[in-house]
Image (cartoon, rainbow over all chains, first blue to last red; front, side):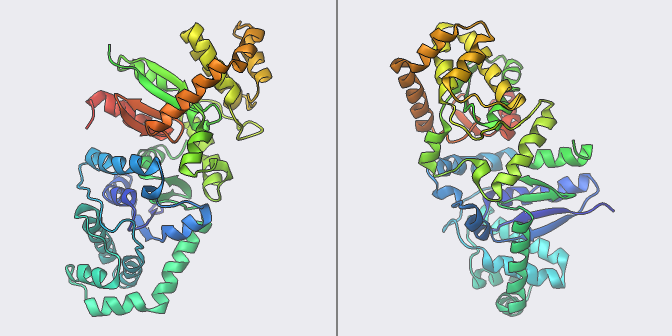
Length: 200
Length: 200
């Protein structure tokens, strides 16, 4: 079995959401699995000096237009949540707590988080909102809430974020195919081409 | 005849070079012409707070890798010039001086500038290098040098740059198709799709 595609994303990232709607099917077409890796883009932004897109002159208006246009293009709903952007620490920690217990459920949870945020336009920013949403998947809200506060889980998210940045990730989505880095939702076509051709 | 595709770029931009290798053929497939519009990306960067890609932590190494990878993908040579980045004021002014006299020659000149910079890896940063290169196309070097210094031409480049930014351009390439904005060489596929489908 070939190595899984590594899919780094931030739950507060519209382009991460759009990629999440396509990445598993894309990988499956090439006999690959996907390793979902939420990380904290804000930490990477401290390295690169970037600010959230929507806060930047010229770039903000373009991307607000492009989020919706890109969603229309692939036929998925899109609503910008309020508040936006927000720190997605709580759902990211919840993901890794779940991942240690049931990796498939963790991915279902991640999809549900993204649907809530960018499909329905409702931020999932704190432990309460995260646990409430997890409960809709039959996950024990109290146990999850405790997991979000667990120092081991906090350290796990820190370690994943540090490793992502060490490997060169600075955006969302940020995808590695057999070590080859691709930044951005609009590179999914090239990710697929790389898989088809085995590089170029 | 449908409106031309508007192609804004900076002569110091690797992705602008890559787009320049493809944009005319792409447009021709859809019965369109291309309006080549060099502008000064540094002025847009003052608005957005961006720095040149290669000077940014994490983003710099990724893009250095990606410039060459993207060039290989479309089968064109790529060498990063030294010094890089550089201010492309002189060849941009030369373009508009030529454009007023012979628009087709101005485009041939633009291609030649890009080939020199990113095909051969030699910066074209000042009037002397610009005039020397123009001479290889049979352009009068002394007249071109005078044109680069002409206040009317200087004002033309300023006006094009200001208009580009006013319309929302902040990168290179930055392309408008019937008013619809697309940023980046990796969006050429979507530009083509937009032309084919008439939007989405």
